Length: 276
Image (cartoon, rainbow, N blue to C red; front, side, top):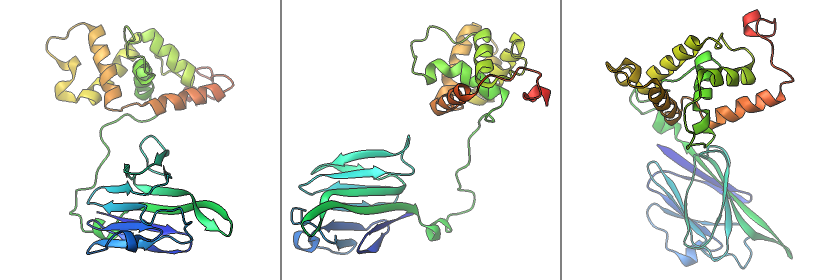
């Protein structure tokens, strides 16, 4: 369901589809034998110290693997859709790397010769969904968003405060945050607190979060014999973090916004949602 486009300065673009592979280097034809599904690509302006065969790019149905075969090192950067953001790794001989969807950039360090000087040789590898193959998918197979919380809503902020110890990496936090602590964190982050100073409002939000995090049938609040409320709150906090109702990135965002805000708008003021 994907195709790979390999391109670079001074060379024609190569399009690969599942089941095909690309051998590339200074003189790949002399180092390996192309065959059905195996394409050889000579990189332009290679310096003499670049290996005849530096790498093999193998395209599968759902994966794209780069096997590094060259004697020298190269730098691989995933620019767009890498998990957790852009990544950069150094490749050495016999290493393999699974490429991320989007644009991947391969630098052969000092691999291009221009007169008496050397510069990095850049090869761009784009891993993308093939629109022609995508159109052949049966209807109803598109991946939809799972159950979640509306970003910026009351329940979203309560979930963020409830899960903060786990999102911040404090796995040994002795207890889940109290109603008062949740209220103060939401006030610090947002200013407007949806009357969360009333403990019942916090309890109502946590029950709503629990129903989404566990599903109605497994909701601990709906169990016939509810145990200690403290234990249930601990389970809800951990589960909400596990199913990513809120994330560490969400926590970092609200803390950054709070730091950049001069002061929180007082509740009931025209600048707060309650005063609008």
